[in-house]
Image (cartoon, rainbow, N blue to C red; front, side, top):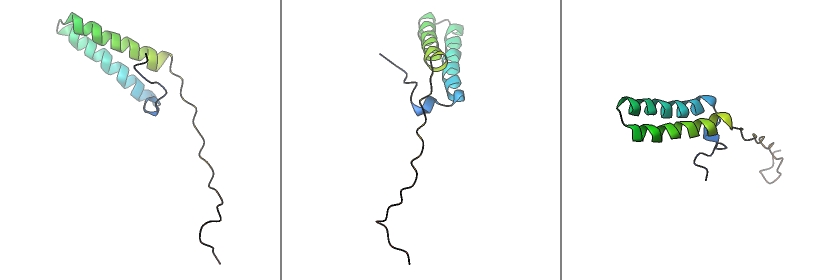
Length: 79
């Protein structure tokens, strides 16, 4: 089961992938500082999983080239 779809266009920019991993890591630190080991482990696992999916195994989807404009003769005729 895949929780993060790394082929989604949302994850193409590197800064977004780093922001997701960084926010999970920061929240792990908040939970550890608050002495909540259960939630620290849960958010830590989310940080590790997101780092693995978005940084280590990330392969960008190939960009599809834009189709050239068609020379359709169905439009209004020009003199």
